[in-house]
Length: 380
Image (tube, rainbow, N blue to C red; front, side, top):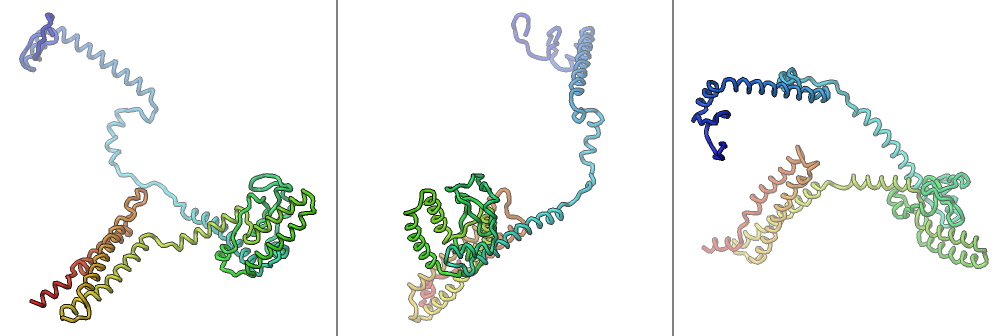
């Protein structure tokens, strides 16, 4: 902008504000007319450059040694980036992991097998009488002495008249009633595959009989004794149809049942493929019958009607839709799982099932002719 406020544009000299018309003319004018001013500008640029280098040096010294930028590192950076590197020393811990994991699995498996053996013995020849049943359980699994345990190991509450001590039937440990877990005799039978030594109806009868006997005895007893009798009676009723277990034994048995369930359960792709195979088998059988119907109608026989053939053709087309949709489901199975999508052999198998299904549909089901068309051809 000029001194009078007018805006001037062009290749202007920064000192005299003259318009030189081109960059080359401006450079020549500045070197010839403003030589002294040019020396001042160069000295100012030199001071600014030294100040900039000083500032960058101070900032570089404040950084850690690993982050300091030097000319040597910058020059050799590109060479180091693409230089091949040898693989360093490595060590596999898989064998140690297998040994460590095997010992833990063996320990848990041994404990679970012990519990199953004891459970099988408990379910064999179980006496109907509660007293004899208690002796039978103690003979198989030794119980911890009541005097050795003052607090419940699970909830750390003290035992008294209202909180009695109970024993786990599989390990003999002591716990209170609130911390007890119960295993139904029917579930226990499935776990071991053993038979019962007595009928459950006899047990129910003995419970009712004990209830009547205890009710008469409670009428003449003191309050403390009555409370103990009531607690004992209720506990006996609970234990008749179930086995009392501690939380640790219950968890081991549940873990084993869950493992059995996971092993017996088929993968989802196997379930889909079995259903697809059943659809294809059913379609083959129906198609054979349908073709025989069409041949019979074309020959003029009256064993079948066109309506029957149309109904069977509709069923075949419905099976074709089911085969097509199910094969598509198998193709996209697991593809939405970002963390563990199907790959390699699994993905190839899913795609091959789809290709085989499409080929089957094109060859067997999509080209089915209507029985009326065959009749028209014969009439002509």
